[in-house]
Length: 237
Ligand SMILES: C[S@@+](CC[C@H](N)C(=O)[O-])C[C@H]1O[C@@H](n2cnc3c(N)ncnc32)[C@H](O)[C@@H]1O
Image (cartoon, rainbow, N blue to C red; front, side, top):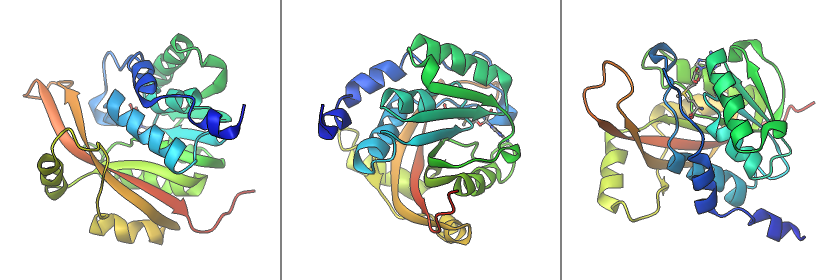
């Protein structure tokens, strides 16, 4: 089978259907900001990484702060050479293991329970939906620094802006789900300072159900920005 055939083997809809079978947290921990990425957002991110930027198929991939494993599992389903999912919370990695078994990719993913600050290693691609720093200030920056140490290409989700939310609303929901936008002034400075070059920024709408006691509404919709970053100096061993 030719490479082109392999690259297009998984349809986005099939990927999204498979990812919908990944069970989220039963009791998410607010202090770790354990929000599960939506099926749709995960499928969009993974598809872009795999088929626009060629960063998944036959690559080594780590999902930093993997939670219940949706991004890591998606990467394995799309044909990553090896996938690691890492989370500080053993309840998360146990659930991720269960999910990988459920989706028949158990042997393709290694689950690690550890604080990301304690790990070393090199991967072609880092995927992350980090805590945005609402509970622990600057948590997203710690993730980003680590991701740029560990990976050649980084796919990282970040808090977006009111302006991008208005942009999404104006474009309507039937339009492409990933809309190209400019980087935030903060990340435009922060990323090059830590050895990265921004290759693209896309905004998308995330919708989550009520999860924590302090949530007042039944559903929350908020924009997030996906940064695609390349490490400037390849320090791979
Ligand atoms: C926003 S959730 C995302 C979960 C999953 N990646 C997803 O998108 O569904 C952030 C995850 O980061 C984990 N986390 C928080 N601090 C961490 C740390 N210092 N080291 C490793 N994982 C951490 C949390 O336990 C949580 O599962």
